[in-house]
Each structure stands twice: as C-alpha cells, then as structure tokens.
Length: 126
Ligand SMILES: [Zn+2]
Ligand SMILES: [Zn+2]
Image (cartoon, rainbow, N blue to C red; front, top):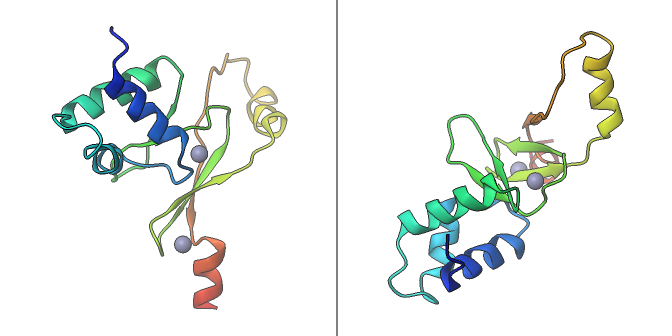
C-alpha cells in the first residue's frame, strides 16, 4: 500500500492526542488540511495502521472503536460520566500471573477495560 500524505496526517493526528479518538474525531480534525479526504479513507488507514501494530485499536462495547498511540499493554477506564476513555497503567506481570496460575494456554494478548467514573466525575458526584 502506498504511503500517502493522507495516511501521514491521520497517523500524526493519532500520535498527537491522548484522548483515544474515534475515526470520526480524526476525520473532523484532518479534513480541513486534506480536502477530498473521505471518512472511508480514514477508516481504511486506521484499520491498516492498527493491523500492523503502529497504533492500537481500543474496542469499547456499544461504542465506535477508538485508536490509541500507546501500543504497549495497558488498561482503559470508560467513564460513564464524561464519556472519556482514560489510560490505566497495568503491571504486565500481575496480569500474566492471573492466567499462568490456572492454565497452560498460550495467551497472546488481552484487553482490560474498566467501567465507572473517572476521578473528576467521581469528585463531582461526591
Ligand atoms: Zn469522567
Ligand atoms: Zn490507551
């Protein structure tokens, strides 16, 4: 696949944000800079970048997929108050221990998604 300027813009956009943007967010942010860009092209490029491990796809049930510049294993907190998806640091060894103790299966990956309120929303409702 050719390495286009559009793809460069899309990748730069993901890498400059820490808010786990959706394809729609990316499209809205770069379409002014790239006339003729379609939402379909944004999807295709994001999917391809995620497949190659350049960025991480974050799947939130019932919501549009989000994309993450941080590709090493970490968890996410979905806040039901403000709708943000925030990074949660995880200790890889602690997670691995969960299955190593119980199974000989070869686990190749995992996604950890927590649900609740972020610190700001929790403080606002307290
Ligand atoms: Zn919140
Ligand atoms: Zn993340």
